Image 1: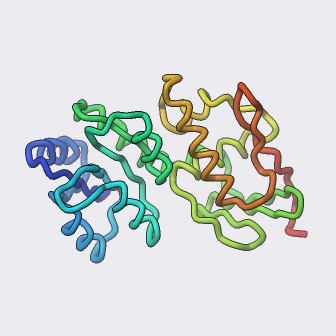
Image 2: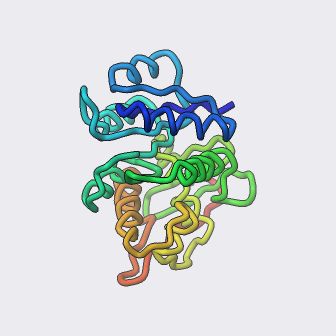
Length: 234
């Protein structure tokens, strides 16, 4: 049974979310502040975190940024902060989704299910292999079995969202993928208003993958993976 942490200071909202998720078959622990969930993480790592932003003892954005230094779990921000810059900031921190209040609890459950399916099932590539790619002097190993990426034998820590996008690009090597397709296949988003989210994740991916030209921007259209496959690290 998957364990979900819900951090929300409004008890009615927190209890409502918990009940809907429990009916969907998840184990849920609710927290009204950051101090309590921080203590919980010291004992048990959750499978997914649903995080409010404005809390009595701190900022949810800052907490997730702190959490990312020690672990990588899927995160959904659940907040009344609806400005585009807030949404973009959430995704820059590696969020897998961002849902604005007020929201439908049923929609939240569907988003949780979709994220956990992707984390468990891996839609990114169809076969179970270890793949090597080269770009300039960089060698990338994309290991879907171990769910790891290395560049020149150095591990690269990707969020679940970044892993999905990289896997989609690799699975469509040399093909230009429009932002709309990346959003649809990786996040189930279809609105053009979310296209900056794709740009944000690509920016984060490039920073983590180093100075090698793995991902090309095709202006006005989208992105493509331009690393080419090699049989071994040489």
